[in-house]
Image (tube, rainbow, N blue to C red; front, side):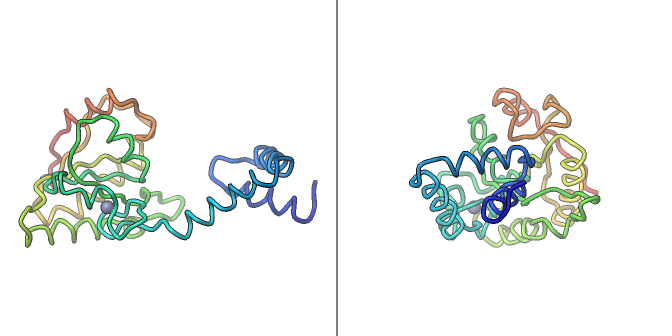
Length: 205
Ligand SMILES: [Zn+2]
């Protein structure tokens, strides 16, 4: 094993999702062997992103401004909100070119084993958004639940459905056809586009 700064770097890298101790070691060695400007670019990009990127105050997508590119785009349809778990899921839905509405990023999914409950997600903010829209010109008429087609995603969809029930808004779920147990982020655009098109209405809890 290493010691000092090298081990510190390996330890930090190993904390990243999807990076085990072996990969952490490989990346650390690569960075140490790389020319100084290369490592500095990475460090700079990390600090810059951390400083400049925040959450959109409307939908909780990542954004450099108070409102993200979708929430500030007046050509999009504000009467439909597509609810996703994480920001990269937006990219997946956008790739289908089937959707022109707004988004809401929950910032995760319910996961009882990891202690993540519905109160840890941006569900109440979604309910507020739907309620508040009724005072404006374009009330939200449909909420599409595009959480992942796995156990956590389904449980999350049910929690959102339950929270939205008192508002009476129409709630739909992506049609089947998506690979079960998969991540929305990795669904191909044709499959996801069809799932979006064939979405079905859920009965209020
Ligand atoms: Zn936004």
